Length: 486
Picture 1: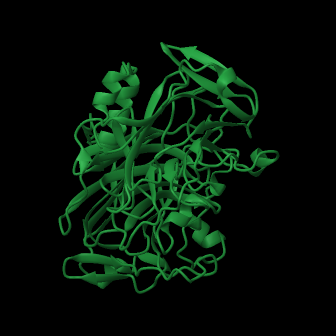
Picture 2 (picture 1 turned 45 degrees about the horizontal axis):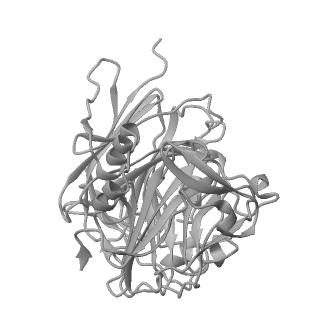
Picture 3 (picture 1 turned 180 degrees about the vertical axis):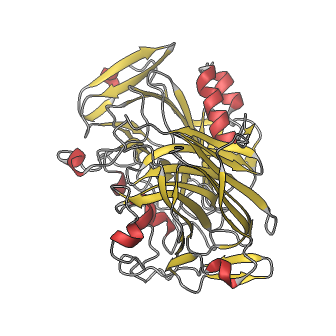
């Protein structure tokens, strides 16, 4: 039963007023910080550790709330090997852990972690190992939020609630739900026994008061009122827009002169499919009465996907497009738990047609999207995979291969099955708008002066489906506005 109000605390660490000399500091120098009416502790050692004491994490049902203060503005950033020269996983920041080696989140049986890598960005895990082990059989207890960022010098309240028998794990920020467990798992989410002591150890985030509760908290409002929480309205507005989908505006398609129809495919004839080259699962796409159907199979956990991945598929349009770009089509989701994305302006690193200049590609693995020499914008518009937030419809937009996160947003409930949804990808100059049923769910601006390559202006496009996806597509339309008008 989810608590309608905050139950009585079962433990509390009042770090906002706790003298540093009385805390059990295992490594590093500790100092107390007061800022905007709230206090906390901060270490100066990346391997520092403060033992806070016992907790309730091994109870079947419970909640944990605490305050953090980031020292700097934190957003997604490129992951480069030399960043880890002295500190492994230098882009991961552990907020709380059940291990004295706080920085090493993989050693923990419980930890709450934020990473500047684009995905997964903010998560809680209840097992030893990397967060991606949560999604391997047997699945493990975790909750992830997409692409979270922080404003330096602002206090945030983090809430985590769990119900182990019912496989529920929820992550809240300032009372707003930002992350959940995999909603499409087939069995129990295994949670490891946490060690007896809760630890803090960060030189980037100050830690304020920490409180544990006996019930599963869904609405943190009573507790936040009790703690006299005052959040910056701009931050709350951003959280509500990002994770609740508030403030979505209509998409206004361009009607000015200069736009030309470059391609129209209703997907009613096998000839329509011949306009595409297949990479990966060759039998996944086929033409049916209702349109182009793409069905990928569930992956075999024992298969080595780094060698050959035929459970995923790319459909590469054979045509090359240049200039401003508008791609639209309708799709139906036929099965829960999959993921489909659109790749646009896809070219080699020097704007060449990579299908003609590079070696042939046959592997359906994700590497072509993000980890190879193919420039592209990629929009994940159907996201129900196990490693993303899949209780709602959400969107992610990235620029590759720089891994630049251009946008993330929740926009509402999951798409109903077997219902036609209209998709629009519109790029005019550096502005990129992604719309669902005429509503602009993402509105991003790319620039060439941010160390992430040029604004992309030419290439092919591809529709990619990951494992266990089943969708229908019809009425594809591509319009362009040329760069050169003489």
